[in-house]
Length: 536
Image (cartoon, rainbow, N blue to C red; front, side, top):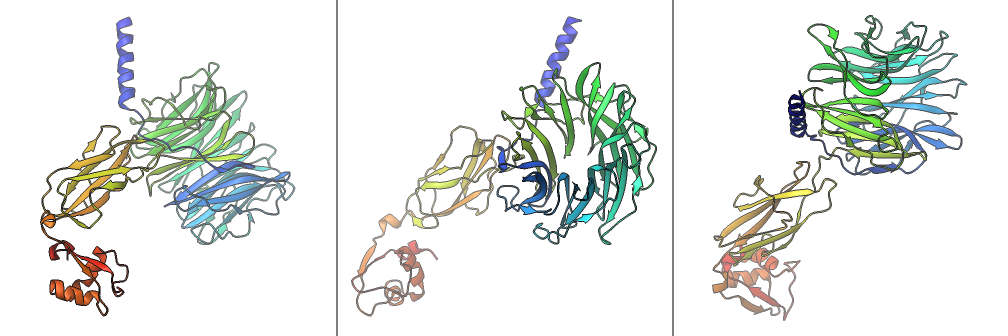
């Protein structure tokens, strides 16, 4: 028995190493220094948008922050709300080249849902806010998902004397909302709705109070009006909290925090299409600390899970991944790595540039932090060479030296070669750290190209540098003539006398570093090299 357990442990460790995470992350970037809360994120192409709450006086208003270069630089924040008494829970989507923002607003004396959208793809022009819900009670916890031409809004309202889920559908082309639909009818209350659209179906999960137990419930709809009977997918566990939906290679998945036998862990449940039922939830995390607020993200053939953990003595954002649809998970990675509490995180995968963006609230002063998966490796630059770029030389032995700017994931190695093709991308990487120079010997006469690119520790490749060189080994045997310019001389006349071709005046001017070939002056000394060394 002991041997079996030991062998199993060895197998698990080997598989874990084999399935090590492929997503590296760049350094944390503080995008709001203070008074920023509850950020929500959206992305389209190279645009990144963050809606957040900003504390102004005693109240919190909704603001929008935008980047046009994948979050490397950010524009000035735009105020979304201006006359509200208090706002909460911003949600953001990018649909049909427009930014849509929903939030909870208290300016009517109670909490109601409002929304706005932009007239342009950059989110710079926002419409006046429009009220979406009309209730004398409190409307909270909005969540939105898009089916392409529609946006489905689900929220919590206690208008029936109990907190229930309601929904409305916004038709983008008509700029109109459907009538309100009540989705749940319970006596205990429903909270934390999370919706996801796929193949014209709206999938919905939420947290339902049932006596002393909290259940994770699931339902789906084709139109946002008629919903299938709710299913308890946390059956067998003591309680389930804060569910989130995702689609992986195998189909629909739900991740949630669960309490079972006095332990709080992260669980995942999978919907099996063939049998039309939910499989028994599987434990994802194994830790003695409380772990909560999980999210799943499917990227290509890999599944990622994110949640909060208190192992370090403060709340940190944890990530792990799986290549077998959640059977085995890699070693957990701390993404926030800060001494303060990290909370209220949101994330999104951008298929346009194969990147993942993460944003969260840091500490208690309202600092908003942005982080993205490391898909970028900086391009090296040539700082020394035997040759001036694109100029003729008689040197047959060549030397190149380069440098690279700092990179969050670190440069691992370089690939380089020299050939006569102008656009070769080298793929043989030399892992002799630190490699920052290369030498080539006894090159033949002609035009050559030195190609260089870098690779970082995450496997990201930089752009390729193509450095042209020209070799004429006979140049040192041919004598350079030094000519003193006389009154009335022009480079046109000099080239006609020396080379028999006056049209070479541009090449001669470039060789002598004369900026304006039409302007030379008496007593100026001009070097006249052999005709072949000027090139074509």
